Length: 163
Image 1 (cartoon, one colour):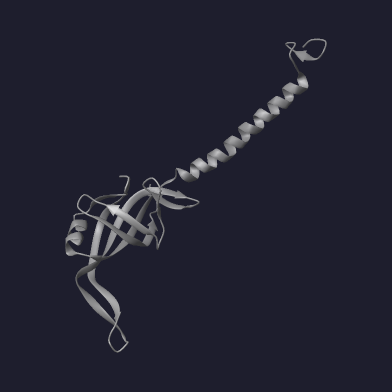
Image 2 (cartoon, one colour):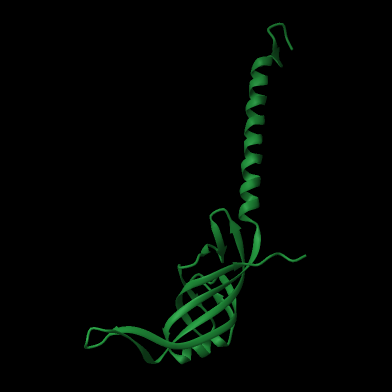
């Protein structure tokens, strides 16, 4: 420190203290917010979810029953098909008397496809693939080796981590 109170003749002690406080504040804020965000975003979790696909042919039911991986449009894995259940497609129509009646649609089915997936549990929700949100009632399109179809998520269950 010279006679003017400057260190190395360029900066004084008060300026140095102010710079150090600003640097420490920036480091502290960065550590505080990035560690929480990283922890929430990167928390890997296993999910089981069920997609209901309506008005499909038996060919598509059989293709889904071969199981395997399901992907989104970009090719990101959104789960592995573990079970496929199906039933006849029933629609509600109005007959000539104005009454509502339930009618079985010939050669059409409703499939419930169960998938297991590894995804992220964040404050914003559950996600699989890159950004496919798992929420009951939302639509999802899945691509398999043998079939492409769209359906509605009817159940999402977070699996408890074992170990």
